[in-house]
Length: 145
Image (cartoon, rainbow, N blue to C red):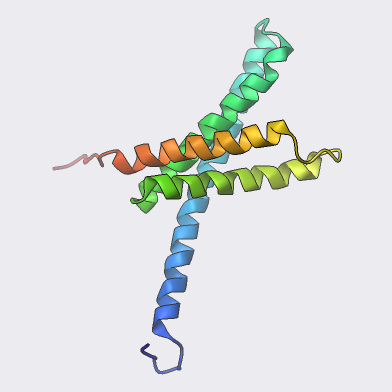
C-alpha cells in the first residue's frame, strides 16, 4: 500500500471517496423516487376527491404510488451510476424501503411489521430493480452531434 505525505493510505481515501460518490447517487435517485411517490399520491387524492371511486381502492393507489416512485428511484440512480442495474437497482429499492419504513415507524400505532410491510418491500425492490435495468440500458441521447 502506498502512503502519502501525511501517512494516510491513499487506497483507503480513494475507496472512501468512491463510496461516498456512489451513496450520493443512490440518495439522488431515492429523493427523485420520493418526489414521484408524493406526486402520485397527490394525483390519487385528486382522483379520489373528484370522482366517485370508492375508498376501498385506497390501498391500490398507495401501492401504485410506491411502485412508480421505486421505478423512478431505480431509473435515476442507475442513470447516474451507469452499471450493474440489477444489484444497484435492488440496493436503491432497499434504501427507499428503509426510508419509507423509518417514516412509517414515526406514525405507527405499535403495529410495525405486517403483510403490507412485506408487500411494500417487494414492490420497492422489484420496481427499483426494473427501473435500474431500464436506466442502465437506456441509450444516452445527444442533442448536438
